[in-house]
Each structure stands twice: as C-alpha cells, then as structure tokens.
Length: 240
Image 1 (spheres, helix red, strand yellow):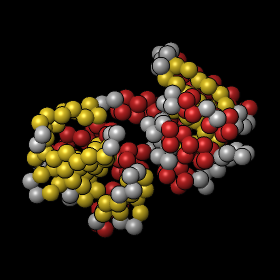
Image 2 (cartoon, rainbow, N blue to C red; image 1 turned 60 degrees about the vertical axis):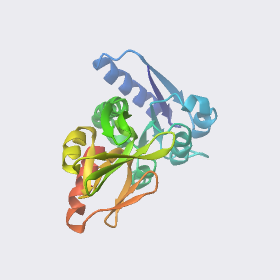
Image 3 (cartoon, rainbow, N blue to C red; image 1 turned 30 degrees about the vertical axis):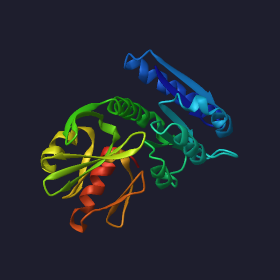
Image 4 (cartoon, rainbow, N blue to C red; image 1 turned 180 degrees about the vertical axis):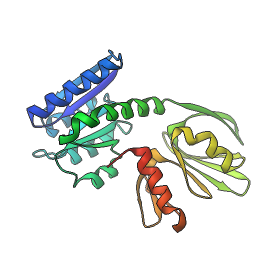
C-alpha cells in the first residue's frame, strides 16, 4: 500500500492536493493507497509511529508553531526513506528543502501543472529504493539495495563501496570505475570526479567545487567539471 500524508493549515490546498493525487493515481490504475490529512505540523508529528508508515508527505512550508521545515526534520529522524514534497506560495525556501533531501518543491500556483510529474517522480523513487544488484567483493558475492550505496571510490585497481545500512561499511571489489558507471547510471549515479561515482540521492548540496553527502562527507569536484555535475544533479533531482 502507498501511504501518503498531506499537511497544510489551509483547507483549500489540503483539498486541492488530495483531489489531484486521487485523480493522478486513478489514471495510473493505482488503487492500493491511503491518504491521511493533517491540519498542522504539531498534529502530524505528534505520533511518530504514524510517521514511520508514510512513503510520501506533502508539507506546507509556512505553518504555525511547527513549520514544514521543522516537521520535515522530525519526519526524517524517524523515517529516513520518506519522500518529502514541499508545497508553498514562495520559492524562497527551496535551498532549505535540499537539506532534508526533498524530492520536489512545488509552488501552489503551479500545482495543476506540476503535481502529476511530482507523483511520477515519487513512484519512481519508491521503486528505485527496492532495486538490488549483485556485486563481487573480496569477501565473496553480495546483493545490495542500490540505494544503500553512498558512493564508489576508485583506488588504483580497487573499487571501494561506501555503503549505508544499519551502519556504514566499506566493501572492496576489483574493476574499473568506468564500467561501474555504465552499470549504475540507470539508478542515478553521477561521476563527480575521476575517482568518485556518487548516488545522486545521497547528495545534500553542491557548492564551492564540492558535493556534500547526507552523512556529512564532502567530495571534490574539479573546477572544469563543476557546472556539468551541478546540471546533472539538478536534472536528476528535478528540483527548483
């Protein structure tokens, strides 16, 4: 079941988003879903067991007491894989949305034209989170959820997989990063440096010729490659 939450303190937009989502899912012949409606960030975040169930939460940015950004931080603390969509009248908060890995940032005036693409991106990401690949490591073959891989580092003839699960670990394989890039491009991995292939879903920010990952690590981006990497990142993320 697809579990969705909508949190907005304005009745009009709660109703508009819900109606739009139902129409889009109906067009896609998706019937197994649930939509919960919340009037405030406080109400949404009051029961963290509920938060663990949601695959996607639509959040108004500007709400009383607990703002959408504050609610997003609480949601991510208990449900790291939840897709966050910010819905607001203002573009000013877009950069803040990057910090909690929001999948989309929708302007209320553009809901009619952008909601369908947003739902498509959410469905693709949920499917992507369940993708597995089998790799040959020094310890033997191992199957990984692709979205557990933070990045892959090339060190001479070795490939070092930086993997996030219950704990972060390093897994070592042999091969060329060029070949691994061809294999993983379909999952949204981008080459930010000759030695680093990065899962775009794990990038929080790109600035000052570096990519900053969700675990706090920073990887260098060559000056001559920076613009290309940033454009790739924004294209894959589809964000404002």
